[in-house]
Every structure is written in structure tokens, then in C-alpha cells.
Image (tube, rainbow, N blue to C red; front, side):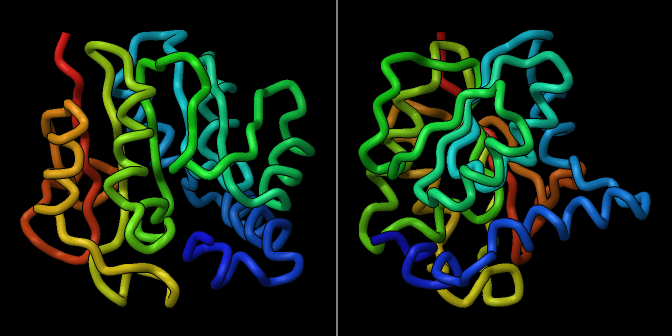
Length: 201
């Protein structure tokens, strides 16, 4: 069982509350699409994207609206139900990333929203390996997650960037960029990081 499933993922009605919160922020003029904008900046038009741990589909839906070929994967059925209601034409797959095998690769795999710290204890390296297995030659894995209690939900693990880089390297990916936010502020330490690791051609 993932940390998400054993923690906040058990809250009844969480998926709709989660989606509604971002919709309310967007309606008030807040930019809630930083992750999608960041990913778009790394890609050619029409590229393929796997949203790993997609939740209610906010990132994948926005990227699909911008013309990208998107697939969303999540372990939480209620989150995927919310995603399907919002974008029934997209492909949504219920699966634990640690076992994921879609039989294809993508130009970019994105794991936003503290996905890696919320996987099952002890599976972090395997989850990174499965995400990396879905990155095509020349493609990238992008992950943003908190590094301390201030940037993580209570159930999440506190992971180190050195460990994350090592898991990526073991999976054949090389670190290319690291930022402190999805808006592209350079990382100089702190409680949140967005990392770009690439598979060489």
C-alpha cells in the first residue's frame, strides 16, 4: 500500500475537494498550471507525455488542451474517476507505478504533486526505475517534490536529492536541470525541488 493510500488518500470525497480547490483558484485568477507550463517548455509541439501519479488530471488535462498526447496513471480510483469526468477523451490508467508497464515510451514523464515521497515505503528506487523505463531515448523525467515537513503531507517520506539522483542514474537517466519551483527559480537549497533527468540518445 502506498503512503498516499494509507494516509490522506482514505479521506472520503477528497478527489472532488482537491479538484474543486484548484478550479476555485483558477477562477480567482491564480495560475494553477505551473507544472504544465514548465513541461511544455521542454517539449516540441505534439509530444507525448505520461503524467505519473496524475491525481484528478489537472496537469495532463492542461497539457492535452495545449496539443500534447497525454496519458494519466494513478493508483487512486476516486482520483481517476474525477479525471475521467473532466476529460473523458483522455487515457486514464489505474495502476501502482511500481508495477507500471504501458508497453510504450514517452517524450516526457512527469511526476508532480509529491508523487515520489508518497509511494510505498522501500519502493522509491523501483518506482523511479519504472517511470524511467517509460522515457524514450532523448526524453526526460521531471519530478517535483518536497524535501521537508513544510512542503510535504504528513504521510510522505522525507527523501534526499542525492538518493533521488542515484535512483535516476541507476535507471539510465542523467540530471540535466534542478529548480526550486515550477516557475524555474534555480535551486540553491530549500524544501522543494523540481528535477529534470534525461535519457541520452
